Length: 429
Image 1 (tube, rainbow, N blue to C red):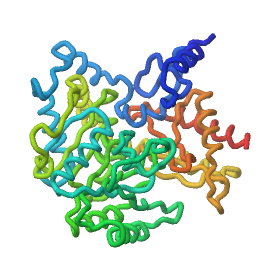
Image 2: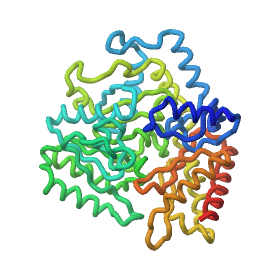
Image 3: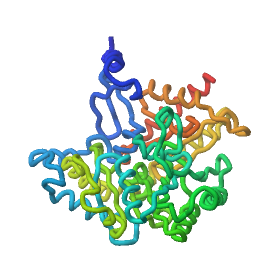
Image 4: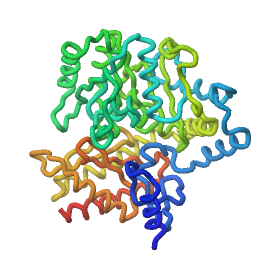
């Protein structure tokens, strides 16, 4: 029996059923390639869901972690603080695009960063309401699920959720939701559902991740900032997936020129090690009382060392520019493919930088979701040695998240496999 099959059997007997996985059991990985326990090679167009922006096991990241491991691995920053945490905070303060003096706190997961951003916003404004958006994903904790705008699989059967969380439509030109319509709905929400003086913050992804890689139009973010300023509401940019050069800039919101009050970061921040951050304007970040923020593992020294190396690699290897180049190559290939006869079920191609997706539909008139076709493409790619992941509230979007360090020849090979997988899946339907 193959090692993968054995592990599947063991997993079923040992791991909770709610922990969904694929059939690829990793043995080793390097940059944009992964080998499973049976020796099969894969090109990785998932990057651990945008975690490995600097690739698997980047040499500088691994060296930084190894050096730190020789000194200490944990003290708890609240008990015995260390310079590397402070130094990383200084670097993130300088990078975060708030246009003001910033402060940083480090935690471990994206959901923790989101929850702490909400805590900080509430402490500063003395308000409790939060407005998120349809299609949003902000984590699997109770507050994270409440903020998330996608029911299955994240919210189903897990309620009730925390109160005073509201959702407004996110712009989606493909489905006819314009910026104007989305803004009008926010104004309606503030006049009919909740007093704007009770809203602490808007939380928005510059590009929705799990929601389907919908890019927030610059005009939408500008108008959102105007509404926030009018009512004393804070603007939280959730950059958990869009941050760390993924979109062609260090942070996705920089494409719009809008300055957020708070920024959440995780995923690509530490190159595969668990670390997240909330960075924001100093007066806001300092609103919480001493002891109100933090956690036992928050700002783990190994992860902090990795993050310092990641920031160095992003600068030294010009990964913002590289993300733009990768995205252009992916988008060009997909557009050429979609224009071929018989490929009409590729309904939309969208993204920002190296955060690219394509949406599958039954036909271009009805735009009905082709979720089964989407699943088939992912499976056909996996058979051929390419790791893809899907997303979208209708389960019909395939997202491409190759490491930003991927070699040109590996990227070309991956795109060839992607095209073969699409062709094979289309021929079966």
